[in-house]
Length: 249
Ligand code: MG
Image (tube, rainbow, N blue to C red; front, side):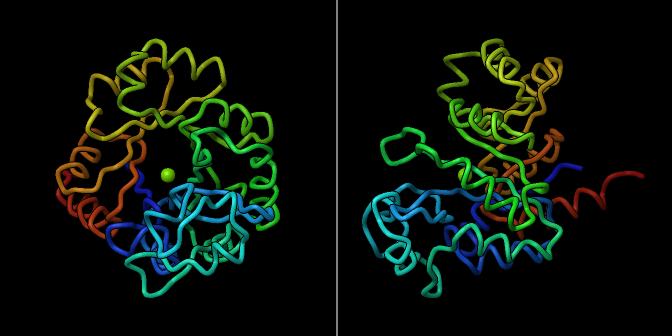
């Protein structure tokens, strides 16, 4: 069965990376929760999508240049006055849940990988008992290499539409196999059965991201992709249930 990953805790249902969204997703009958991590100036690891607080909160500034206390004071837009969580707090929410982690390591606001960030993430996940339930993702091959050197957990490469178009399937498959990565995530609008079959033939598991509308979710389920991320987890669960019920036994 195709796996559903609640993207940033279900942004279109609960706001972007909100505590309410993450708590709700932990209680849902789905498979994974997707989230993004950034370091603060004083070494905390915070759960937030953007590298800055500008777009999604009432506060401005790059997370990596702010203190943990500064980030915790920021109020997330379209939340009920909530503040960003730390990775430790996120682990506490999911430890009693059966939902697994799909952990994206983001670059900084300059687009480059944070220095010496990955070891702290892995150590925190291990300490909080969530490392064995984590799949890592990144758009940066450099970050995936760092993760591969520090952990045996599964990794997947998020490939943006322009990168996929410019490199093409063969080059993407070669880049993955050279790094021992066996999964790819591409935009649902770029996905089709032919592309999935070609990656599958190359031994690469095929997943999608940004399936937020009913047609996008239905497409991912009809294709039978391994997993897709969605900002609308409640909708995705309802559609998956409907399709499962309709399927002949
Ligand atoms: Mg992400």
